[in-house]
Image 1: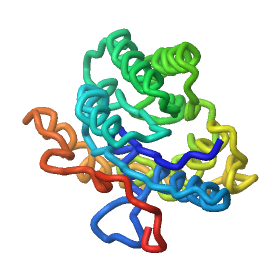
Image 2: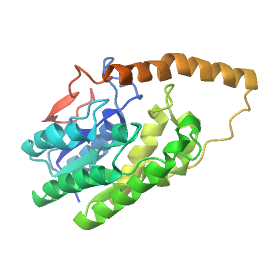
Image 3: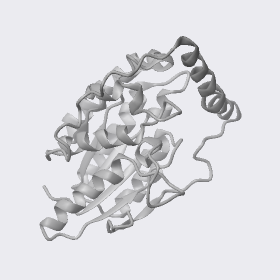
Amino acid sequence: MTWSRYVAIGDSFTEGMSDPDPQHEDRFRGWADLLATQLAEQANAAGVPFAYANLAVRGRKLDDVVGAQLQAALDLKPDLVSVVGGGNDILRPTVDLDAIASRLDEAVGRLRGAGIDVLMATPTDTRDAGLFKPLRARHAVHTANVFTIAQRHGAHVLNLWGITSIRDWRMWGEDRIHLSTQGHRRVMNAALLALGMPPADPDWDLPLPPADPQARVEQLREHLDWARAHATPWVQRRLRGTSSGDLRTAKRPTLEPITESD
């Protein structure tokens, strides 16, 4: 399959945090941008013009992803849409996973009914994620729901749960919530496989060499630094009812060709 009009919708994961864009100091790159570059190369080789839009904004909950973002994506008349949402909802103290599944099912149904191919994504397995380990049960249920929805509508699934190599803490940014540059690159390769294409790097899922053991004092210092720099501000935003994505807009709101500056 050669796609020519790809639109990505979602939250910070699809916006690309924490993968700095080497061509744009004020924004992130991430797996979806990297995937778009690969899809553009395939389209160009087939003599097909290619364009890409990324409507994802950090902090957005599912209501926005399958609401305003979905409608904007449909208006762009793409032939491929990646839909990754619900992660910020799952982080809340209480969550209705069945309601999330129902909203996603409706969104994917709308896209498939319009003749658009869909790429969904499972959450990651938080088995080795320290403070985020309690989310594992929620992530497991959401993973089952994503596969069920994809099977019902004939969608593709980016199986983050199955990528064991990104359980390594070195695949994550300083905030321990968003992927690092290397993590995003591995997810891009997994996305290519999900779409039935060969990965850009055949060794993409090989584990990193063992990390040097850290002294307990150093580990404690890192935990304290993380709490001050990332955990505390996150809790304060929740108490205020604000989001890191407030006042932000999509980084690529319209379908544009992939250029060297990307």
